[in-house]
Length: 261
Image: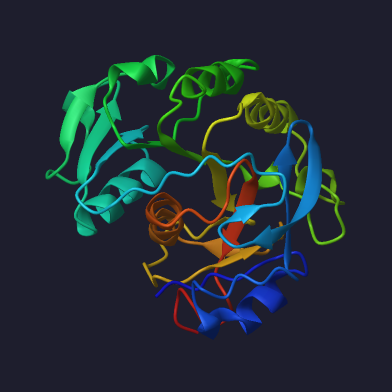
């Protein structure tokens, strides 16, 4: 069972609650995330948020999941995790001949900007591309999937830290890619009223890290790490048993998870 804990008080709280498991979502815990253009905190209630308009999707086993950007590291990890859980997976890539992910997936040529062309019960968008308006165009395409659970791989830089400061605005944070950060933020803000969640590392990837099957949902922390495989665990958890809607969450390993020592 993966480590899933409410956030709002930082990684320590999330890790302290790790043994309680998926059912331990307490109304007293909060979560910061993007809704529109502001980072806000809303308390968890049951399986949704206060203010949620009632959109509810849950994807059962052996359902159809489309992974856009399946050629990248996050996309390949998502494909592998979905297959391991018994889903029918379509790996959507621009160049099928260059796909090196799990062979069990159905590999098709496609583009997230034409997401409606792929039939699926849930969609994972793991696409990244330079360009100020790219993520806004992706969001607009995903907004057309009204009957689909949408999980987007996001960027830690635009998550708020424990004191509410966006990670990209903290002291010493690299600024040479700020336009890319802002492009991501604009894309999140452009996501509409559908059933979506944005999931990113709370800090960064451990690029060679293993699959522990455990993670905590937490505020942004530049020192936080999670593997691609455990990010994929979080992505699939949000498809099979949605816990967050219309919000950007960060996931990170707890102390002792991931690499030994």
